[in-house]
Structure formats: C-alpha cells, structure tokens
Image (cartoon, rainbow, N blue to C red; front, side, top):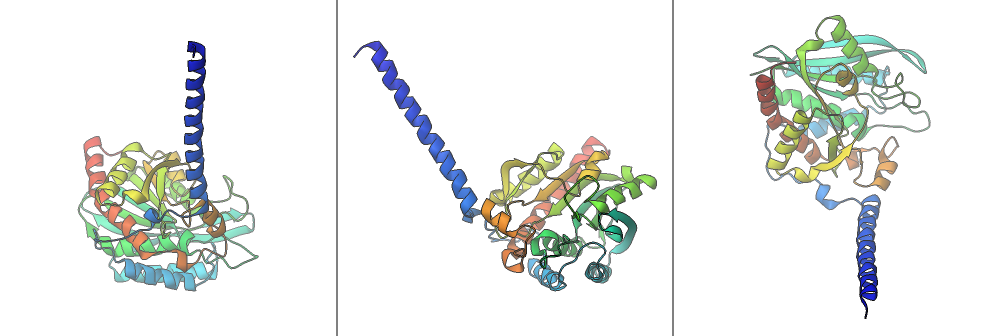
Length: 331
C-alpha cells in the first residue's frame, strides 16, 4: 500500500470515530430530552441545617389548596395574610410594600411582603421569591412548583433564621406580580421587584442591599439548578462550592442558563445578584413542557427533599457571603 492510501484509511477511521462520538452526544441529548436523570432526584441522608422540610411541605399543601393565586386576587391576599401571621409567630418584624401596577388587564393593587431578620451590623442580604401564580382563564393553575415551592420554602427559611442573627440583616421578600398577564415583556412581568427597587431608590435605601439571591421553582423532585449566566461570579462560586461540599453537587449543575426573574431589577440597579431556579421542571425537556405553566404543576411533582437541599446550601453559604462582603468592603 502506498503512503497516499495509508493516509486515506487514517482519515476514514478518524471520521468514523468522530461520527461515533457525535452519535454518543446526540444520544445523550436525546435521552435528556426524553426522560429524567435519576441522579437528579434528591436524597437527603443528613440534614445540614435547622430547616424543617416536612413542615415546609405542609405549608405548601395549604398554599396549593388555595387554588390559583394571581397578583391582585383574593387568594393572593389570603396567602399574604397567612404568611404575616406565621412570620409574626416566629418573632420576625414584617411589613408590606403596597403599590398599584398597570397591567394588560388594567390597574391592579399588589403588595410585596418583607420579613426582617435583624442583624448585628449594618447592611442587608436579601432573599427573594414570588408568591403569585400566573393568570390563566382556560384552566386552573395552582402553581405547586412555580410560585408555591419558593413561597413555602421562604416561610420555613424565616423560621430557621429566626428574629436575629450575627452579621448583616436578612430581608426575606415575597414579591407580588412576578408573572406576566400577557406575553412576557419589559413592562409586563416582575411588577413587584421593579416596584420594590424603585421604592428603595426613592428612600435612599438601595445602597443598603449588599447582595440579593432569588429563588424560584426549587421544589422539583428532579432538582437540577444551572449556573446563572448573569450572576456575580463570587456569589455563584460560593454557593456552588457549598453545594459540592455538602454532597448536593448533582443538583447544582455545570451548565449555564440565562433567565429573567426578580433578580433582574436589582442587578440593573448595581446589586450583586444570583438566581437559583430549576428550569427543567420534571427532569427533562419533554416533562418541562408538560409541567411548566400548565395544569400539571401539582403537588405530586414537588418533593420536600429538594426544599431541604436548597435550604442546607444557603444556610451554609451565608457565612461565606458575609466574609466576602467584609473583605471586599460593602457596595
């Protein structure tokens, strides 16, 4: 065989290997689209925080029992009232930020709810979530994961942290009106967080917010939170490092996502932010399409173990976040 023929064979073999590798990648992607990865189903062998996931799940059951809870609705007001009662019993100071929003359905009264864990030093670390569900007229949307899971999680997190802590104060904020009433746009959606940032700016309090972490859709039994492309890098790395050390690495993935949520107005205002959201609801692309913003967003797809995992990670991440802010100097 001449040298030319030998080269041709090598090229053919190389192309065959490349084709085989491409097929493997395609098969893995197809498998990801078709079925959940069982490694993403959370197993809690050890609790790493005082967070009581069973109690949080009971709160979630009550929340879902209210039915749809779109911004401005009676059900949303009932939920807000219950949250205030529970937070007061836990000893936290609670206040409301009420505002009127212009929506495609007309003006609507909305209210953000703020629970304060009083700190021993100046400055605030803000934990945010939204408690409204998206408005639908053709089916009943109870939002067990999207709206419900983070609402119940935040309530139990407030109990976990208690009325006082060493370090900066914690503000736990339930934002109203995260969901849009029509197609998502700059003016339709994020009503509560946009209004809250403006409220802080008007009161010259925006500079008091040293970091903001937003949680959304964290109850999925197949928990897989991807890296927030827009996050402050040091904030993201702290949280991901803690997740790895606690054994939750399978649920805080290496992939990157770019999603607009209630952290956006804060990021635009110059606050270091991080979004924690599992935007693969059900563990696969197909399941996500079946579950997200459909009548399938129900309690059977939400697991207490996922709530526990997120709480454990943030509970242990907060001291490192405090330390970084202390070293770097407050914003």
